[in-house]
Image (cartoon, rainbow, N blue to C red):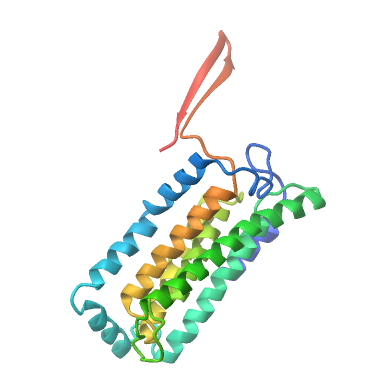
Length: 264
């Protein structure tokens, strides 16, 4: 169902038109490396609830043997997916769904009507998003090697952090960023964005029910995936910002007026 909804967005928007300032999504990717913009993107990504919330949760589960007890309960009861094997299959399927939606929403962002310019802008913008996913997967792999935590099923020592979880939340974050620039009804956009986060959460929980990870593994992976995807997207796509305060003049019958808009 979610793939059909995302595909409907692509058909409706077709990636045509431009952003509100007249530019094309992706055209300015890697065009400038402003230290203030990069630092601001890192700060915004870190302090976002989708980074701090999972980090706090991972810290809580690391207390005493809470991690192990929660994992044992999930595997014993499998409340969402019914069995360990079904949970593992669901984690793969849901992660793939998010990956497809990231591609679909990137293609649906407005990059103009000219085929050559559209293609060039899309390739640049999608290179940034691919880089965000690659960075997430690469850092996740390095942390796995450094921590050597044994999985709950004792299959290997690659438990921390969860690669499924970090990738899923990276895809969800990128899809949601793309949806911000697609001209669709606000209710549909909000529904898809909430659904993306819930789907990524489903991937994470499925890894716990599937006896492949402890809760702290998937929570840290969620924080890592969101942070890196949000940071790299905002720092290097160079999309026009949305002003918090906007002052505009407008004609009125007696002369001219001033309009102040504050976004909060």
